[in-house]
Length: 430
Image (tube, rainbow, N blue to C red):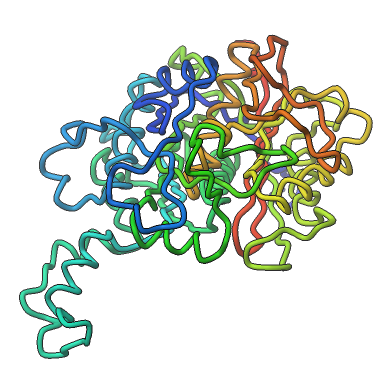
């Protein structure tokens, strides 16, 4: 009888492809190599004249070649969309799989979309046309307006370009929860596969806020480090002298597949995406609660979702922004959740080298965790010379730490109080 039927078994979800465009490199191998070498991607801003800003440093993507994006898509793609298209293409190549007419309906595309919906160049063009003397002239708003600019600046434009480029015909969604966006996109894609709604997913995040408006906004919030004299040292997560984060840009995408689907085609897996936890702090727009309440709930939910006990965790890629309140509350949350296991972890914040990629951060850092599991190495947290006594955790400093990593956590906490934690673990044996 139908009432006696058991629910279908929960499918395991494997990471079979990784694609990255970051301040450390234009693909995943280059990013991972620079991270392990301790190379900083933070420097003086060169993409525009930032000399009039109190903060003149950032973590820019360097040397990106627009020809990596198909000619027919370029005019519809902003800078962040071009990063996304390149990273997504790399992830699919790396996985050795892509949607086909027969499988396209079984693919999902879930993205963490960038924080700025309108390209700065388009805003500047609008100002020149409609308010050349600084006062808006309604008669000049519409003409000669650009339909293409309107299309590329829609909140779902990046998602639309991705599904068009790769022929995905199943589920699609774009979410924006600030710095938690990329992590939550991966978690949402994992759940679609886990419950049988999709067999495969292209999931990740992208952002590019290093422009006059993005930089000005974060300066007004007082969130950025103004250590313009020494850019590579400006991001100092968990250090006593930390004074703000460094704004970055980039994209990270993963190919996720149901384990049974991946095995049928003989796919290699970096790791299993095993758990997703989310919680709202609802405290302040820019700060977590000092108690770490939201992050605590997110980490506990993620571990429970993965059916892993706290003592199983080997590595934590911390959100670690280098702001005084965030670092302190995150460390309190880690100690509350992991208890005695916290003293046996390897902990690092890779934002110390690549800056804060905002909506892309959670996806890029989850990819870093997958690579750490594959290679058995925990990246170092740079610039940590005088640990804050309120941030007492076993940080990896100086050089990467070689150690077996079976279970890793990736934290991503966003403005507005969104908190995400992902659990990754070594892929099950074939």
